[in-house]
Length: 485
Image (tube, rainbow, N blue to C red; front, side, top):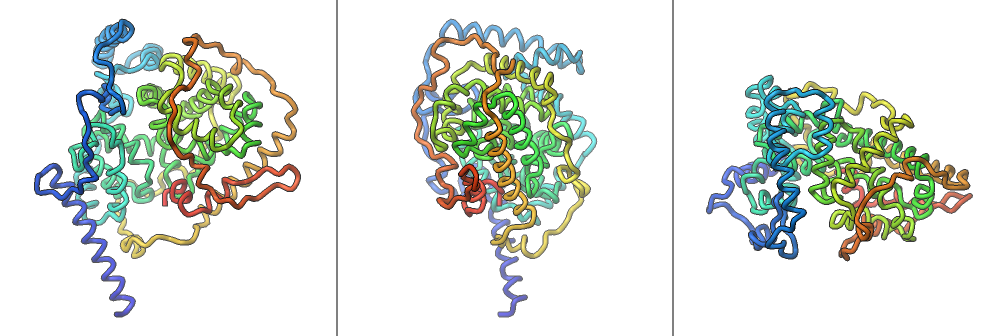
């Protein structure tokens, strides 16, 4: 068989695989659809499901206490105010700000998010585009296999996504597959599944597609720069995050550097999916509300807020793995503060950062935004059609590794030049919280990202600061996780 024949055979195999995957999503919940038993684990639906549709390991209380009943009453009153405000959109900016920071009620989050993201206008301006992208994706998308794998593991503890080929699973597959064609320069990156998955909890399929497009392409949110190869926005935000930390929480910054805790190890999912699956879901929705209103500066501020609220606990930890597990796993189960207290702290941190002129990072470069015309179909090259994985690094990926090493070297130098922790106003914010709310009581089994890193290290000659993160990036499993390959 000639090389040409081999390539043709591989292309046909990829096309057949794509056709089979698409067919399964089109069948959906049809009894004739093939579903492996492991894909639909059993669960107790009525006893362990919260109001967002997420399931829990233990049964939820069967009765509501007086505090919860009072919160429900308040939310019902807010529903009425929001419905009036949505009917007279746009409202005065100060009123909108106040109500969003109090939290958008669950009952009106669907229309509110659509207003904030201008979804209805996008649909009206692009009539027929989404169905066309979907048809092209079913025939030509080279991302179908990866999208299918990610859909199968996204929010599987939520009723909407629990059952294989459920309506929401099919919608998630369609949105991501169609967008890989619409934004051919970006294609698909794994973090996009979580973002689209959150949108689909509150929107219909085409609405979620255009909401996703706004988050990716609008300069207010700019998520294209997070997902595109090389992650230029991630690099820019991590650098600014380090800059903030070194100025207003120097003791914690020095502590992290001493224990080789690079921001890449804990902040990737914070930035990529706006804290979903890193803080309790109810709190992540509150952050999303504010993010949709005020844009990406909220992400930087919330990252600092988390570290500030938990700095005492973090400073007591003397091990990199313990720190990373705490930030990546434990806070998701028990944040230690109420949602309202966390948002109040976020507001104060945002004000402090603005006063210090640190609320906005350096301006984005052109590579953080699409350069190709959106919606223009671009046929994939032969390597992508075949689905062959690259074994070598691109120049952009090599630059990511270089940036990590450079940043850690600079952090080490900064730490050596810092002789004491200088208290700032941000570090003296006082929160009113229950006495026991600071302790994280849940004991969870989990493996941190850091524990999988290479045992090989590079050291700076002067201060013996280990650069494990750079080696982690060069480790194949971690490269796939960090670089989305």
